[in-house]
Image 1 (cartoon, one colour):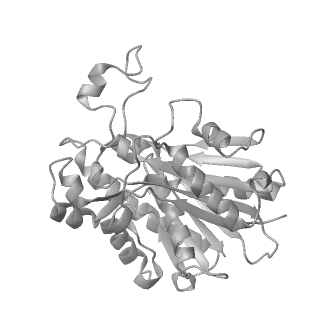
Image 2 (cartoon, rainbow, N blue to C red):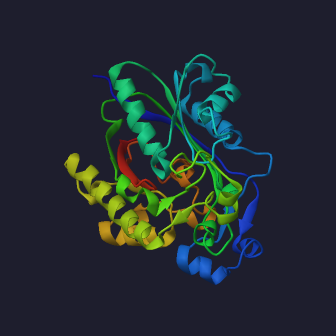
Length: 333
């Protein structure tokens, strides 16, 4: 059976840098509060005329170039976002048009912060089955357009940044340099611990969204911070142990651990729980904040570009997001 590998990665960050002091002008908070609670010092925000697919296009082109192939070689496009260009159809269609990929299969997934790992698992299985040869995964977020600076929303808003990351998954010619395993999990009993109520069809009325929803803040994220933090640490740590145990390894064998960049305090707790050497853990949340699904592919690409991940590196990706959803991917580069 053929195996798959990460053939290329890329990312794009909007040039606009937003510091904690800029955030202080948007809502009632302080630099000390943000840094103490989250470790974030700055993040990037898109311009008003930039959408999720606008950010995704340069990331995708960079990933395809890095893979050493042409865009015409892509035969499946997967996109993950919680900030789509429009309510429908799926955001992947809008990205497909901008990449001039007419006619190929496209797929939207809604796996929140675990989008890259779910996308890798889907791509890996399609390539192993011989259905597709090169799969392009895009994770793009414009979370600044979903910011709520009210008392109820600022615990999330202080974290949010914009960006896009992409990866090309292709056939592995060397059986050792491949996607070794992926693991996927979810627990819908916690769906309302981090969710957005409206628009929706489960609001006991005929309208998907009303002015009252806007006034009451039901169109914004709402989070049980303690529950999300505790589950995020536990589930990402479990996913890391699951991957190394499945492959008959130990944490000492891992060259680089790249977790979803949710919050610096969460990453510190994961490092403590997994006993992963700090120098092997890639962290960039201080510079970019939480970009939901874009975090992991951007961190992965940066780790490759700065030399932390090199040919032959054993790389462990772990992520956790609303849903709850979590998983891991173990890669030999």
